[in-house]
Each structure stands twice: as structure tokens, then as C-alpha cells.
Image (tube, rainbow, N blue to C red; front, side, top):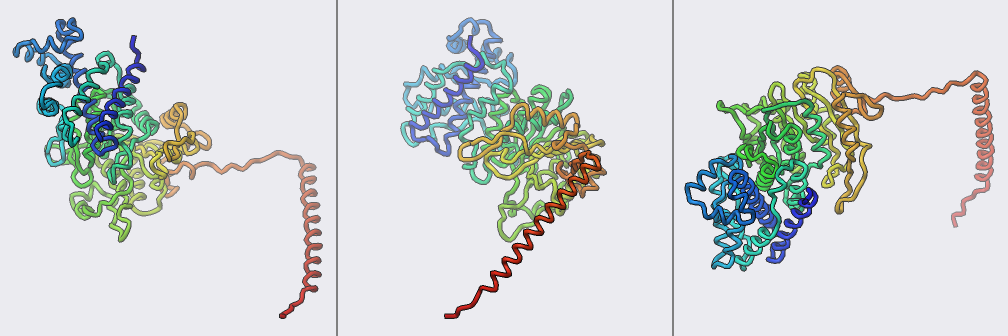
Length: 544
């Protein structure tokens, strides 16, 4: 019997084989390599999902076993159409000639690269409504590119090599009952070489799983259903996937926006792998701050039940800064918009805009968790403090968890997680987790890694609103006001003075000991003073 771990090993081997094909044809570490790897893998995944679906609906195909694709190819047009009508609407529709076995048997035909490209293009068009990602301008980004276009020559051989790797590998059919944990690991392995700071100023960074888990499990503490989840800077979707998993994938709808086309494509892949295909129409490529996309029929910004975000901290938005400083944005950016500095424009604090956008985008009972630079929680002036004041005065703050340094291997900035809850009218919990974790090396960088037990400690303490010595405090909104709106747990910890019970005789003895020591030190000082004075009299100045 094949185990989950066996599937994991085989899947990773397939990904490595596809990378080897890219390297063989001069595309190793090429800027387009990640498109080839992820799209070829997705083609395989959709094939196997389709195979499982049609076999479940049609006993004749199930009995055909490995010859199922050939059997399907023998179906008349009306038989095929009837079968397609029976399938789950979230399963990609494929024609018999689109299947990997069909391409495998045609690989020796002339112009195979064109055949392969046309197959992917037809699948994308056939399923455009299901899988296309929108841009904020309304353009649809379809599922597949023409992969042969990424090589300059040997196009037929390159496409044959990809199809052979896909045809010779295992089938995903037996693993589709697995949920988030399996496919989260596969997704991370699939894109691990393409999710780094080599992507330029809009590079996507993985939010560490510990951070994503803490955010999701502190946000979702009760059973909920039919809720909306939003990330205005979604990246590849790690936070949204953890949130959806905590709620239940069938109980929520995902919405997102991100300025990066690469990120939107990766999030689409993540949604497909994790059974959230129905949310893909709500994935938008665009600038959330300048042109927020998700709006109601009256043009007002949509409100969401849950929001998670790890926004960029510093980014040059000087080109459109004045455009968003407008009358219609006064309510959304209530605390203000950072001014354009004379130099170092790339250090403009764009995270301040994302916090305000998130606060504005919550429903009346909405909850949010945001990764922020720790400096935000103690800043004594400016936009940061105005945001904290509103959170406190409107009683919509649930707490803060200050994370260990280097929790992100790619940045040395200390981070905290801000939790917003518009229903929390009671106490607020502040946690200082900076002393947790183990220091490990990740490439050239040092990273702090939390154990599962430490993750659980943070989650349990936060959700119980427990005060733990030197770790957490539970404070009122009035307490926070008295501390000038500081959200740093350390500023609320009690200063401890140790007292030791001793008798009068013990006290007198200690005091006499101190007196004796002082007399001895004073005597040594007098003696040293005399020696110094004596030596100075022997000094003379010889100008020659």
C-alpha cells in the first residue's frame, strides 16, 4: 500500500525531474523556469483530478484501469458531453486529446511542440471562467503559457521531455482525499527556489508556517460557516491557506489582491491544490492601495469577516502618493499618508496604509491579523500612534504577539502580529515571545525556528487571555491609554524586588561587615594617596 509519505517522495522526485529537463535545455535558474515547472506540474495535477472524477462517475472508465484514456477517446460526442455534465463544477474539463496519455502517444509527430502548446492553450480557454485570474483593469490571466516559447531551439525535444516525465510518473488519484497538510508541503517544495528576494522589489516571501499557524489559530476560535477571507497583499497565499484550513475550506470564500502577477499565479496554483477552485475568480492582480478592486454594487469597498496580511513594510509609492491623498480616501486612510522623503524613497512606510485599509475593510464583527514591524507597537508619534489610538478608543483590539528576532530568515526586522477584533470590548492580551525559538542557519542567513510546543504555548496563552510571568499580560483599554497607547508587553511587566527575611542580629552583623570593609577600603585609599604624592615629588622636567 502506498503511504502519504511515498506520494510526497514521488511528487518531489517529479518536480526535480522537471527541473532537470529545464537545466538540460538551458533553462536552469532562468527567469522563466518557475513558469515551466509550475505549469507542467499543474497540467499533470488537472489530468489526474479529471481522471479520478470521470472514473467515479463512469464505471466503464473505472474498469478500464490504465486504458481509461483510450476508452474515453472512443466515446461519441453526446456520451462525452453527458459525462461532463455529471462532473463537479470545480473539476477542469478536458477533451480526450488533451490527456497526457494522448500526447504521449503522439510525441513522434512533426511539430510536437506546437501540438503541446495548443493543448495547453485549449485547456486554458475551455476552463477560462473557472481558472482565470483577473487584473484590476478587467483583463484575464489564463492558466497556461506556450511553454515551448521559453526555449530558443530543440522545441520539440523539450516538450517531449516534459510529457515523458509526466507520463512516466505516478498518479495523484489515490491521494486526493488528503487535505491541507499534504498539499501545503508539496506547494512549498514546488516553488521553494522561486520565492526569494531575487524577484526584485515586489519579491514574494514565504510567511513562516509558525507565524501563519499562530495567526490562523488565534483568529479562528469558534465554529463558523459561510464567511469571507481576504488578504490585500496575498503573495503566494500561505496566510490565506492556513486561515481557510482553520475555518474549513468548504465554509469560506477567499478574496485577494496583490500587485505581483507572479504572486497571483502562485496563489491560483495554491487554491487549486487545496480544493478552493471556486475562489479563483476573486483573485486579483493589482495595486490594493491605489486601486482596491473588491467593491459592492454601489462602488463601496467590500467588507470581510476575516483578514490576514503580511504586507510590505517599506516601499516607494511616491509615484501615486498624491493620487491616494484625496477626499474619497480620507475615511480609509484616517491616520494619514506618509510624506515623500527627499531621499530613501524606498523606505516609505507603506505598511501604515495596509493597516488602515484592513481596518476599513472589516465587517462589524470582523477579525484581522497583521504582521508588522515591532516598532509600530511603541512609536510615540505619527501615523503609527494614531492607528493604535483608534484601535483602543473604538475597542477593536484583541492583542499583540511580539515574535522572536529573525523569525523571517530574509529580513532582520523584528516583527509582531497585531490582532484586531471589532467585538472585543474587554481585556487585551499582550505577549512577548522574543525569548522563544531555536537559532538555525538557513542558507547564509540565521533564522529563529519555533517548535510545535512553542507555537501551542503562544496560541493557548493568547486564546485563554492568560497572564504568564515574563511572557504575557492581560490589560484593559484604560491601562493601554495610561501607557501612552503602548502595545509592548514588556512595558506592563511588574518590576520585582526580592525580599529576604532576616533577624535584627543578622542585620547588625551584615552592617558591621559592611563598615569593616569600608574602613579597609578607605585605609587602602589613604595609603595609595600617600604613595602618589610621594612619587610626584621625585618628578622633574628635563627640557634637553
